[in-house]
Image 1 (spheres, rainbow, N blue to C red):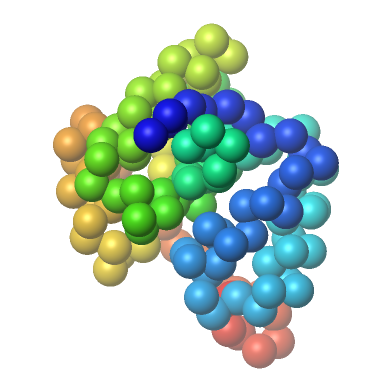
Image 2: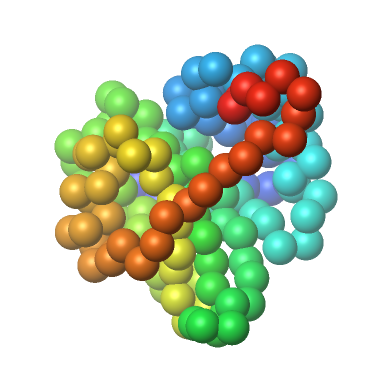
Amino acid sequence: MNIHFKPINKKDILDILPLLQKLNTTTPQDILKTRVLEMITCSNYECVGAFDQNKLIGISGLWYSIRHYVGKSVEPDHVVIDETYRGNNIGKHFFNWIYEYTKQKGCEAIELNTYTGNRKSHKFYYNEGFEIYGFHFVKVLRDDKNFY
């Protein structure tokens, strides 16, 4: 394996869809594509990837903001490593790269959300030194009230 990490070029953003669909099994592909194309236009968003040579094997969106309680922060979002590469500490190396990469951009803290049923991610984030400080609530405003 020749693993390395780097930002994903905006022109290549749709390359993330196969990995992203592993996390978003209920979101229709056309909606997912539309959302990703809109996200990449946001000035406070970028997507980074883990690569084995030229093969994309992991992704994380990075949302930047300034919070009154912690300062400039980054939120890793839709983090996933291809299941055939799991168990090789790639996630740990990816996060170490993200820590350094975002510190160079002036970030003082990292915040993230993870689904309540994703216990493997909880263990990973605890081992990375993350602590639970609150709950993340969602209210769907669409008429169908469905989460997708």
